[in-house]
Image (cartoon, rainbow, N blue to C red; front, side):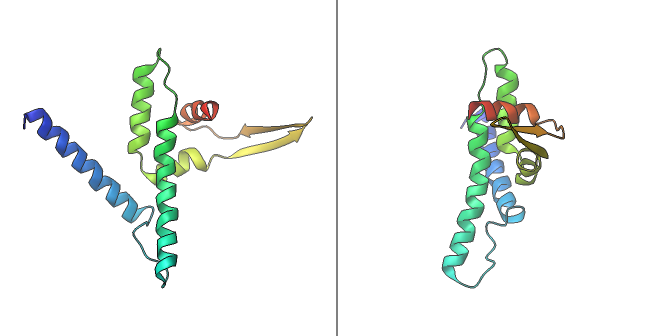
Length: 125
């Protein structure tokens, strides 16, 4: 193997170790909370789906040609983001829902650095 391939292989291994640590610690996907095999399987599937949601969101974010470097960097950061950070940045966004004139409007009440990426993802969906 060339030195570049060795470094790339080491980075992939580190990413897998980080993924395993996050699934074990934060999401608790590898924790068996109940006493039946089916219930443990269901818990594992739900935790895995939550984790997969983060990856799919990162892959669905549109990249405009003008800002390709910046958008690719944000995508990489989102893919490598810990689940706790993803939950705080993209799921737990405080907003006010206003219904009126046959419309529903969402008013975002707080700003975070990931809000631009969130709005691009929302426009893409």
